Image (cartoon, rainbow, N blue to C red):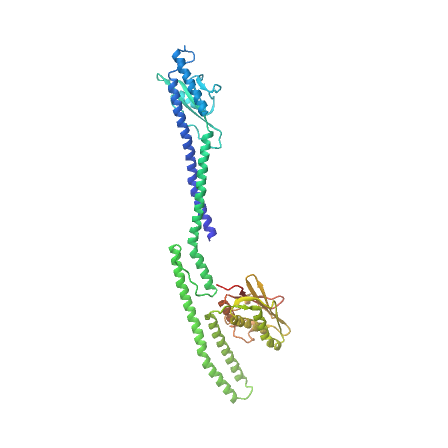
Length: 468
């Protein structure tokens, strides 16, 4: 969820920063150019004031005072060009020069300079030139009219290079870009913190849900952080978990109490059946059938009590030699295997340590080996093996029996479930359920799969590190 929420927040914040950055960059460029234009307007106005006192035209007879004023204007234009590198000149209406600097500069006949000259001839200052961007090699032309007796007699034109202005704009843009990058980094950090704050209760809730789904009913969610809606969800989840745990505890208590309370009457009933059997002829079929069913019912009650205890009792985890435990259980079941004419052997390393409840693991392994010996025909083989698989230990029991179909594999381990093909085999249908409950309490798992070329493969997975 974080991988979907975080890019969305980053893209949104980047869009906001770009929406602010582009107008700011455009405003900075316009401000820099406007400052240059204002300076040029002041300069042209000053030169226009000087040009008003110069002789009216190039064909007029120049007086000594007029020549002195023209010399002053030319000197000012030359010094202005030498100092700032800006071309400037005063031109009569017909385009002939009154004074200019540098001497080889000519009035532009087209482009921005010509448009500014034409506007000034109309008696108004030229419009602001188009925006010059840092990647453009443009120049700024500004013109002002020289008015005498209400008429425009000449035009002052300045033609400015834009290198320094474009450098200032680029520098300002770099500052803006740096600020945008810093703001973006802060935004990404804020997005990480925000998504972490929002999703932390969700992750905790997911972990607690997984724990409860795998049998750790004591897991709860801390509802102290996150948005108010998620805190309310966490409290509701805790209330639901409390109710579910209470209901399951009542169910376990009922099964344990019922199994315990039924054992005494059943024991008395079996005793009376045995006494009744003494009074009947030996080999009486009905009494033998009743005796068999009574013993089967007693076994079911014992298994129910074991299941209730397995689901209720906490695991006593210890660092255990799994290989030695498996070899020991194989030795214990060898007499049964010999009696059933089934081969039974352990293969694998002599020592592998993992964290498990030795008693629970032994009981689970006994149940699996018992099932394997029941369903494996004489002359076949049952193999118990152990191997390391990363951070876990795989304890496998593979038999050569008839195996199970895909539908049966999906149901194996359910309480009281037995394959319709194996109803004649003794058992209550609770042995694998008890095994699963015992293993889950210690952080282990049990899985079923077909064995090649035939049979069933049961894998018990034990953690190598101590479960949290």
